[in-house]
Picture (cartoon, helix red, strand yellow):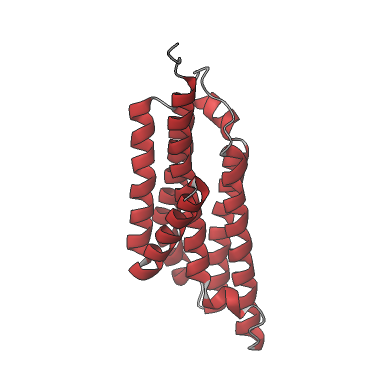
Length: 199
């Protein structure tokens, strides 16, 4: 079995476990714990780029998870219209994915602003991870449009995005965890390749 097949299986297993849990609070905690393991690994290995990438993933998810509850309560107390509440709620999620996109587009610059280490550099994963945030942005945007059209006109044109919304989001989360695991594997392989060979 090739490494790419193993990683694909890992992503599918992560995705499947998120679906079967059927509790978004537990799923997010599992997601954060998985990312925290990679962060801990990068601390032990003193790999600063991996640490920053995993720390940004953890920070973005934690801030969104904590603040969205307060935002939801604020919306429900401020607006009586359920459609307005839903649209603003999903817009909040869209905003976080836009922020995530820019955080990872400018990850190296942000990392250099946080650390003076000369080890800060662009990794192959910096060119991948922001695409997951684009994917999530598209999914949430289409879900929001579908929700609006369905609520206003009772037309479910994009019902796929409404019906499988959680699963599509979980797929994005599973992709991020797979990318973080790939980073750890890549680091170990690079370390082996850079070791001086015995003559």
